[in-house]
Image 1 (cartoon, rainbow, N blue to C red):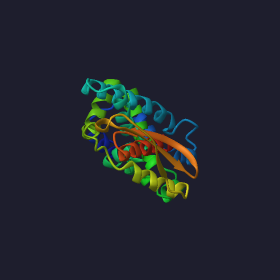
Image 2: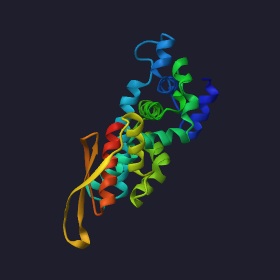
Image 3: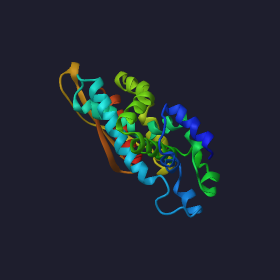
Image 4: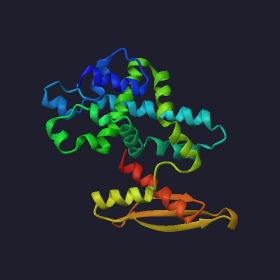
Length: 231
């Protein structure tokens, strides 16, 4: 990666960095660091750890300030959808982050530049670098810039995609199994019923979700399970 490439990324993020080496580290995968004998901590895993916490706080504050009328439970669900792997992967794709990554030859050859988990981790590491270099206020500016459309979508109830579909694709690929849903309870008056759905894969209960319709309860159970799998 050359300095020109990094400048392109900084322009996309609307930041003026002080310590470019932090961003280089954020974009360095462990496979590259090991292949080039850069040392145990020259890759982005520690920055990813930091960026994960910074992102959650930035999203939490933005939701808290923007939606003062919403209860804790709904804010928590919105945040979970905004910080799970699929969302971060989509953000990384918009930044074309894969083009900036330093990968080992094997990782690059096996499609690492398009791998959701790898790109989501690099995105978090990038936020960790911004935090260390420019502070939390700049992180909040970047997060608001990138996540604003998704935060609006979360409020409208149309964030990203169908979690039942996402989870089914994941379990079929990883576990060779299809999720099953069972409504285990319903309560409340007809105009305000609450359903609870149980999600089962290979005979094991993975999650429970509630909602005002059976479909909403199933989607919530799928979302909880999917985000568990993609922490």
